[in-house]
Length: 131
Image (cartoon, rainbow, N blue to C red; front, side, top):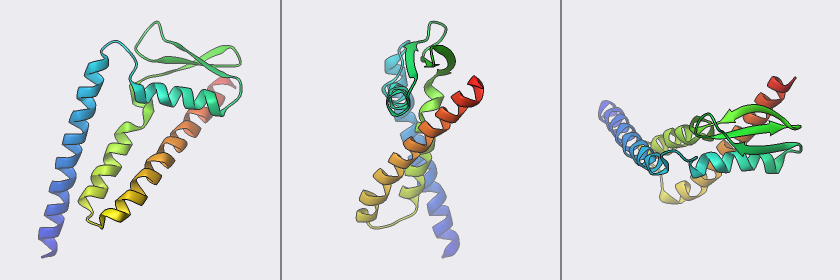
């Protein structure tokens, strides 16, 4: 019985991960040479929450250049938006069966905290590189 539940967990996790990641890759394909909405949201969130931050579109690659105290510091590209971790979280939650009410509470709160922690991570990376 325990072995069947473990196999079911792995199958649900893998299938949901592949489906969600596939949708994300399709969405990225729609943006082609432009920055995707999640990466732009991450960049604007950093600039909104912290003083002396600004951004400009990158001329060298798809993404934004994050500027701190009028100095170009880092490029924010597709990998900086935390979506890959969010997809893993959602896949794990779907594989771990629970009541739908728990999902309505836990998933939005978790995604919000993932986004917040990612913004703080980018902030610290900028400060480390600046100093």
